[in-house]
Image (cartoon, rainbow, N blue to C red; front, side, top):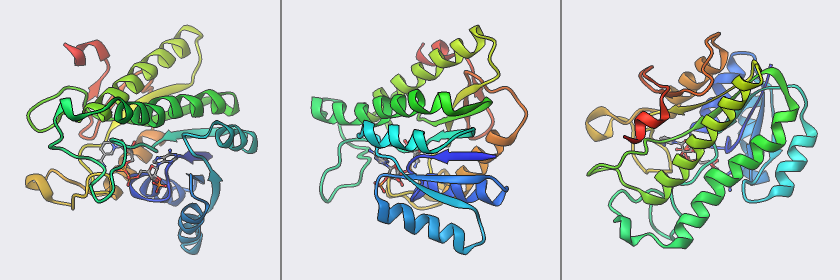
Length: 245
Ligand SMILES: NC(=O)c1ccc[n+]([C@@H]2O[C@H](COP(=O)([O-])OP(=O)(O)OC[C@H]3O[C@@H](n4cnc5c(N)ncnc54)[C@H](OP(=O)(O)O)[C@@H]3O)[C@@H](O)[C@H]2O)c1
């Protein structure tokens, strides 16, 4: 089996690549930086795992097209690469205390460009290169705001991603295809994205290895997840509209 994971040079993406390779899957480590991508591949290969580097920058259509031209018969595509906001020097990527009215259009535009348009371009280019039973797995976040969770750029870009998942899933069903596309809510995971450590938030924050195992399990099971948003605890949100009410 072959799997491509975008943004696999670190964090959850690297953990997914590691776990999938341990399960005998030939992994393609997507990364926008050649140095960071090759370092990740070398780490996997040094452990006896099968991995290749693929240059993919979600803001560079040409890189996505070139990557897709290099891979055939892909079984699993994990759209993992993502950002929570436009990067600001000296600040964590995800600013939990940023008020909704503090977001500029530039923040929204960049986050949408990577999380939604970039992911769309990857799906669009790789779908013809996937097997007829291929699975497309997308990392997503909760889109209902509350006192602690209201990152406008992150939520809105992932809400658009969730809607895209539903649209593709509908089409796979309508065309009686066996392909699947679904979202995964991994919960709070300790990575550079949020600057947390395992056990933070009263024990809520878990490791990227936990997320890697969850996503690999979903990639390899024989359940039809098409159109689902699967939460880390196994809860399935299959009615996207219900999430919005
Ligand atoms: N951590 C969490 O609690 C959590 C919870 C729910 C969902 N998620 C989702 O899980 C995914 C991975 O997040 P993470 O926590 O592992 O974050 P991370 O450690 O910051 O890793 C993000 C990855 O995405 C890559 N990336 C960013 N912009 C890119 C672009 N334009 N083109 C290609 N790659 C790009 C990064 O590459 P560079 O190293 O080059 O920057 C990095 O490899 C994201 O989609 C995130 O929304 C995370």
